[in-house]
Image (cartoon, rainbow, N blue to C red; front, side, top):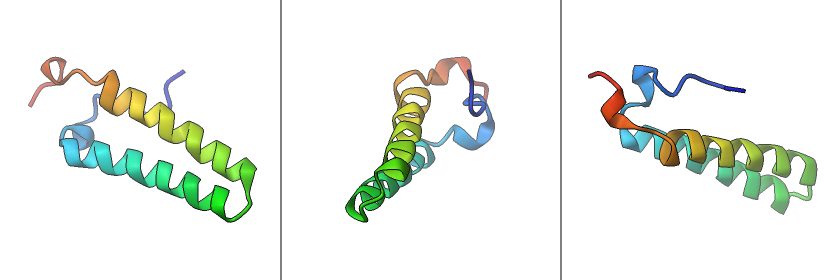
Length: 65
């Protein structure tokens, strides 16, 4: 299952990919700190998926410029 297209030109710059992951995981931490474990787990899962898709599995040599 694919939530978004990592091949989209929007995701080419590294700072954008890192920012998306940081926002998702930061929001998860905020939700856990606010005693909302459901939303924390949800955003944590999205953050982990984004980290995998945009940082770990991202192959810049297969993406055209």
